[in-house]
Amino acid sequence: MHGAAPVLVAHGTRSVRGVEMIGELAVALAAELGVERVPTAFVDVLGPAPSDLLRELNNVPAVLIPAFLASGYHVYQDVPREIADSGHDAVAVTPALGPDPVLARVMRSRLRDAGWRPGDAVVFAAAGSSDARARHDVRRAAAMLGDLLDTPAPVAYIATGTPRVADVIAEHRNSSTGRVFIASYLLAHGLFHQRLHESGADGVAEPIGAHPAVVRLLASRYHTAARELVSAAA
Image (tube, rainbow, N blue to C red; front, side, top):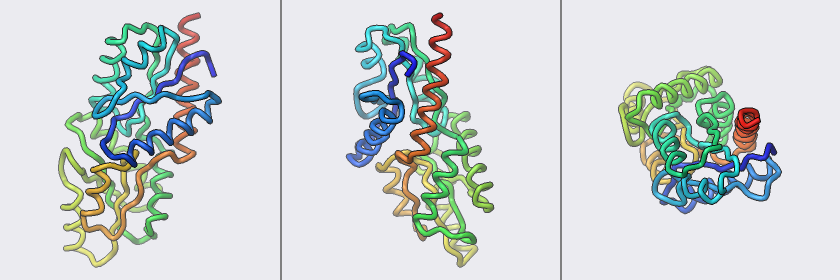
């Protein structure tokens, strides 16, 4: 540890299992960092908000760790606003969790667990965003997965943007008799992941979740940000 308090920042979900998965990620990250706990803040749906947790720290240096798979509105707008609202003046923010080759490797593992085999088609399913920077991040993530699988992984969206996942699956059905699997570019279970199971694919990979490689990635991001925060204060 570097004397900076880690705070995990997640989107929030009404799914009980989704909240549990974020909790599992926070517990695993605490163990990786060697601390008693890593509190979790949410930018939507649930509380506490990041500003709430930052105020509780009483200006103890803090590192916010966004568990977002792309750098969209939440990273560029919500997180900075929450820091400003808190009045905390010693806060560092790590980059968004994705895109990253580590996530691509986890997604490949999840696909294999779902029954995907070389020769099967893959659809890269993301929640979607109106932010062009987030969509760019998603395309980069899909390219990373496609390179690993040595097969195209076209992007499709669950909620915001086109093409929609179900439409891409239907197009595949019309042009091929081969199997098609969905690579879920989601961190945790929730309504979006549930929709993937209703899209007509032969299999749906589990969300990325609290995979040990993801935990190590978050820990590495924390250490880098905390060192920079300490150096800046020296």
